[in-house]
Amino acid sequence: MDNKEKETIKQAILSKIRDLEEKVESLTELSKPVTPDNAIGRLTRMEAINSRSINEASLSASRQTLNNLKKALGLIDDPDFGYCLHCEEPIPYKRLMIMPETSLCVACAEKINSSLT
Ligand SMILES: [Zn+2]
Image (tube, rainbow, N blue to C red; front, side, top):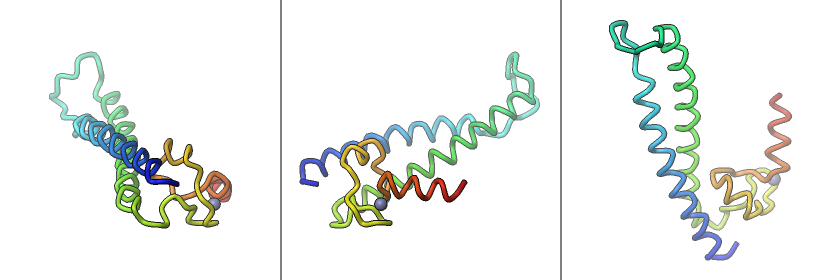
C-alpha cells in the first residue's frame, strides 16, 4: 500500500467516524427510556418499547464499529496496518476502503465466521 492509498483510507475512516458519531447520537436519543405519560401518538407503549430495543441493538453495533474505526485510525501509520492478523497476508485495498476497521482478509474472516456458526 503506498502513501496515497493510505491517505485515502484515512479519509474514508474519518468520514465513517463522523457518520457513525451522528448515528450513535440520534440512536442514543431514541433509546431513552419510554415514560408512560409520553405523548407517543399512535404508537402504543409496547410498540415504543419494541422499537427501543431494536434501536439499542443498532446502537451497540454502531458503537462497536466506531471503536474499531478509531482503533484502525490509530494503527494506520503502523507498518503492520493493512495486513491480516491471522495469515499476515496484505488485505486488498478495496476491502480496506469498504471496511477499514477490518483486521482480517476475506478468506480468514470467512473461516472465522463459519467456525462461529
Ligand atoms: Zn488472512
